[in-house]
Length: 310
Figure (cartoon, rainbow, N blue to C red):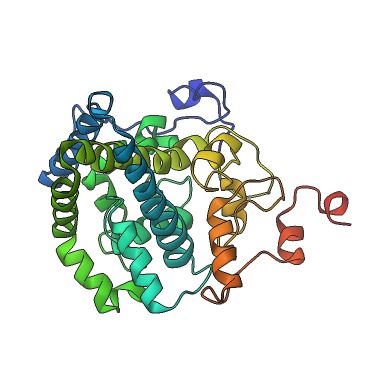
């Protein structure tokens, strides 16, 4: 699928890659904008514009509080809880800790757990096919963030989110879904009351915008540029730079080969901060049922199993 000529398809390859854009979506013009799309677009624009005030409002207090908040919402919330725990069941945490980390993920402002997990599970189920919610074969920028503003595109693919019954069955996640925006507004009000406009800019603007693009890079860059270590039937790549800045999520080919694995950086030199946190929780008895790929699993996915694992 990835090697067909550009003349046959009518679209070009993404620069410096072998990924061909097969179905280019209109990001802004000549498409129907639903009310949800407009709300999402204005929300994203708000946080990006807020982040532009960062040079004018810099204080070390605001910087360090934004950094601490980024750790909590990015590593504990999105990387460990939303992604590795809820989406893939790569580990288990006590419910009080799971719900705490999920709530930190809510404050990353990347939608509620039911929506986020459902979309990610569909991505793995239909990876880099026409039903993938954010494949670069629909265009690089569409895979990066354009898909977020096209609810019709999502509705075309799956009318009902039937792949998250495990979360829908829990009152906590249903409550968060119903009241999601109130948690964001409430947190923003607390931040402003605590530190004024500089805290609002750095915690709600800079931290949120940075978190968005770190997640988006995994969806876009890690399906276009990097190294394929495992024989997966998709475009996923390991990208060391993205891995460093996304707490290990950039070892994306590793992840698609072994999506149930709590550890994405499978080699000793592959930095994976998300795994280090999980390993610490395991050592202190809070993380259980931590899943890792076995020798047999690696053998099955290897390009050259006879050489690599003998």
